[in-house]
Length: 259
Image (cartoon, rainbow, N blue to C red; front, side, top):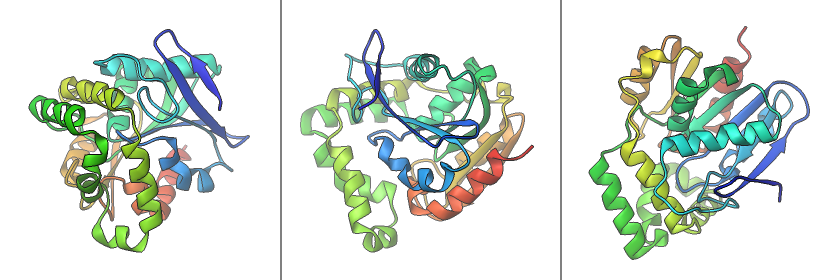
């Protein structure tokens, strides 16, 4: 299992594709790098794809929390440095989209085009994330799979694709509880609403039409506020890259290959 050892933790990563520009994928909270399997199939012939498990998730280590967006964004830059990747495109979903905003604000020269998916400049409230942390520590992540299924996938998609949805939720339930809580703490403090206008990288904001976590209005705000933004609304809920994989891939490829 390829990894790098940082001072704080081990980061698990995977590289696919052998030609083209680099493209970094960044996962949702409670998901691992396999959530992008459907993108790798269509994009690995055009891009060198770097996926990784954020701290506290998947095959990566879970250092003591709480974490901050500086930590999560810094992990991306450290991984790119270790792999000698000077510049890459970026695609992140949910907390991965917040990580993308941090990177575009703090290291814009390291990135080309940035896709911010099913995310917002501010997700939830500090109180809601504190409540989530308490619930996870008391009851564990397995107790949240039912509610997560409803937030992440439409009933129609879940009924048609039970094995795929169950596999994603199984990985959610297996996520380290303290690592998950550490990321919730980062979300409790993350707020880029006043900074969005400083993002100069070209941005594609992708929304799930029925996403109650980060509704299309949140993505429209991102597209309208950054200096060079475009909005794309696709069928589905929060994990829109899985629910509308073909349309998502088409939109991402068209955006990344623009001159």
